[in-house]
Amino acid sequence: MTKNKFSWLHVLLIDDSQSILSFVSSVLEDNYGISNIYQATSATEGIQILRESKHFNLLFIDLNMPNMDGIQLLKKIKDINYNGYIAIMSGVATRIISSVELLANEYQLNYVGTLIKPLHESDFDKIFSKLGKSRTSKDTIESLRNYEIIRAIKNNDLKILYQPQVSLIDRKFIGVEALCRIEHPRLGMVSPDRFIDKAEESELILHITMAVFKKAFSDWSKWKQMGLNIIISINVSPTNLQQPEFADYIFSMIEQNNVPPEMLCIEVTENILAEDRSLELSNISRLNMRGIKIALDDFGKEHATIDRLQKLPINYVKLDKSYFIDHKGSNHQLNLLTTTLALSEKLHISTCAEGIESSEAMALATSIKCDLAQGYFIAKPMHAKEIIPWAHQWDKST
Image 1 (cartoon, rainbow, N blue to C red):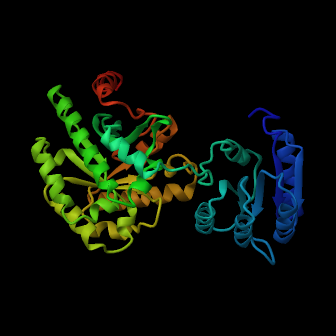
Image 2 (tube, one colour):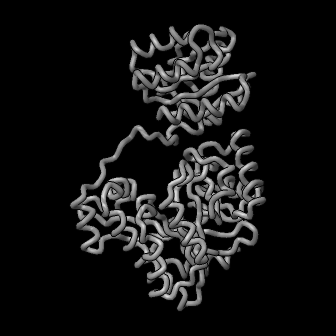
């Protein structure tokens, strides 16, 4: 890593051990060319320094400190609206560290990793490799307004992109996930995080979902005529599943479009596990009973409990991309992955690794025996007309 690349950083180290402070300071200065380094020997001193200065953009904080520990400090850091990077230093048990990592994310802090004590110089590279890449939810984006969503539906400006999914056992192309976008006259192609939440506040989400199904089934039929028979996965909002007739809508559409039920996969989010919601559970049970596959999306992102998987009609678990992007080097995350995979295998539930953006992530997903994978390393989302050429190219390269 090039020295002086990080000279723009203003670092605050918070640890009650002077020897740790001295060691970290020398590593940052000698290995990364950082000259703006400040030290605090307690959490109380650290938070006081942060209140007095807005220049700090990287914190290294110890968890186990007297009077105010690092966990309490995280809450105070959140309260003063600090928006720089945070790295944790600790020698406590990995389970505690994992819970603190979750807490940092819950606080929407820009957490970039944990250094396990005793510290080694080489450990710091994994922290600095993430600077500028961490995904923080502090950057809010403005949602489209209702009239813009309605206009898109009426003008047929809902566009569907498809991201391929491949088998990790034999590398065969087995399916696509349909991803909805809006082609906005001023903003260009708009991603769903700018309109789905808004649409879920009204019946607009049902109109969007039905439009996606209609377009996706039409594209699937064209691929089938050209000799490509793949599973098509479509995301369904919990709001959709709260419609008493939702399953019947889907049954009608697959019959009209001659789509075999087993070639359709409906993706639902983890929060359907949060409580027993009769309408949602009724709809997914009816869909699954007819042969339609059900995938639990973003598993591990929210509050799903593994033991409840056996109580639901789930065919696929899609492992959240954070396992393979943000925490791919964490032993605790690896333990969670292998535990989930072992239970999924026991319950005859297939697993799909999301967020495969590098050869290392692909190797990890393969090594822990995920069944399927999708992500930019395999293919970016593409238009329907690009699927057949991509499939031919994939077959040649595998």
